[in-house]
Length: 204
Image 1 (cartoon, helix red, strand yellow):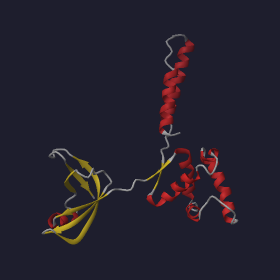
Image 2 (tube, rainbow, N blue to C red; image 1 turned 135 degrees about the horizontal axis):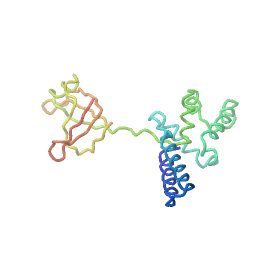
Image 3 (cartoon, rainbow, N blue to C red; image 1 turned 135 degrees about the vertical axis):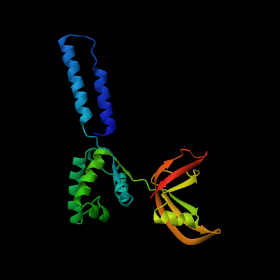
Image 4 (cartoon, rainbow, N blue to C red; image 1 turned 60 degrees about the vertical axis):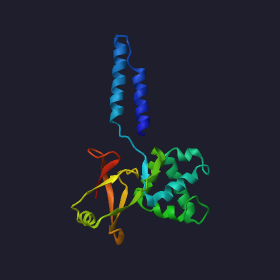
């Protein structure tokens, strides 16, 4: 059950509850509905599987399978993994298979089989690649960042910075690039107490 399905089920129970009658049957009915709601609230929600950048080929492979195999196989993780088991047999027997060498190799890791089954049951997406920003920085600030003494940058937010973005801080002295660069990740963003259009970027 994913988050949306859980919310829909809880709402449906709310919709059928709340009887106005005060007889024992109605009270029992409401108590049963309320108890069901509390149980469902405690159920663990399974979110989408996130494939890393390196695993994008798995998501691409799954996308390509749609239209090539029946929806029945793609609507249940258990059914899909049974299908994959048969495909592995065909692959090892050098018969036609929907598997590729790269997918077969990925599936040799046990946790990846669990991940694949969960992806079918709960949906999947590929981890967003961080945006890389090339920035200039003066030597005195560059050294402070590299040493860890300076863990922030104040910048004009004309690049739509986001948490997780990467900063490539290129050292410039007297307008010339020194050849030194430091790579940092944005861990925090705030415009508190800054002039319009500027933000403080926490970095590590």
